[in-house]
Structure formats: C-alpha cells, structure tokens
Length: 175
Image (cartoon, rainbow, N blue to C red; front, side, top):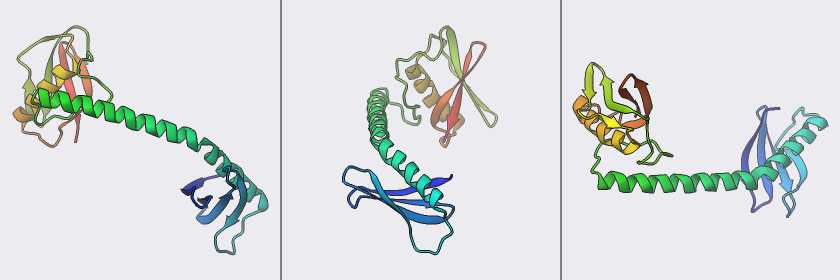
C-alpha cells in the first residue's frame, strides 16, 4: 500500500491522506485514536479491507508522530549548535568564501599523519604551501578558502568531504 499522509490537523482532529490518487480523511478522538476513515468525494472503488488497512496505517503514523517530532527537534538543536559553532569560528578566522560541512567541529582531525591540501578544478590546481601534522577541519577550511580564491571557483564553496591520496588531502566540494 502506497499511502501518503498529506496533512495532520491536530486542531480539528483529522489526518488527510492519499492512496492511489484517491483522497481521504481519518477522524481522530481527543486521544489521537482513529475513529473513522472516509474517502473524500466519490464514487470510488475501495474495498472495506483497504479502508481498514488505511485506518491501521494512519493510526501507526499518528502513534509515531511524537517520536518523529522529538527527532526533528533534536536535529534542529544539533543543526543550531554546529551552525553557531562554525559561524563563530569562520568569523574569528576571517574565512570569506568557504562553507563548512555541518556535524563536524573545527578541531576534529581529518586524517592522522602528515598531509597537505590540494584542490583541482577545471585545470586549475591549488596546493597548500604547508604540510600539516594531523590536520583538522579548521585547517582544511583555511586552506579551502585560499583554494577558492586561487581557482576562482566561488560557486563550489561548500566543503563536503575529503579524498586522501598519498600525502595529499583533496577537497570534495558542492555548491
């Protein structure tokens, strides 16, 4: 069954859904239990067992909603934490063009060992003058900012990751 939840309207105690291009609604009681399942408009050829399956799936979706809401809130808090952390770091280190990947800290080590950073783009190559011992994400951002200016590619300014080749760490970018 390919059931899509279109809208949860807690104020009016209903869930709007769509199944095989047919719209319907499930009405809820005050404790968020499905009390009825109906098709909107008609006439439709939907068997009672399909309506029961819709009712069961909508009930499962409603039951799982608090957990989804908690996960969403945690993800928003995590995003806010890393955004604030990087915004402050970028400002303090005068990074002008590069944007970091979230969920990593500036002090997180990219790779253990001695490396330099490189960036190849459309025939232009940037190679850092410095070799770093266990370079951090912060080191990478500083070099990536320089690489953007060197290559002139201000479009691909989002640092998505790295590829290690020998003693070089190559920037993987996105727009």
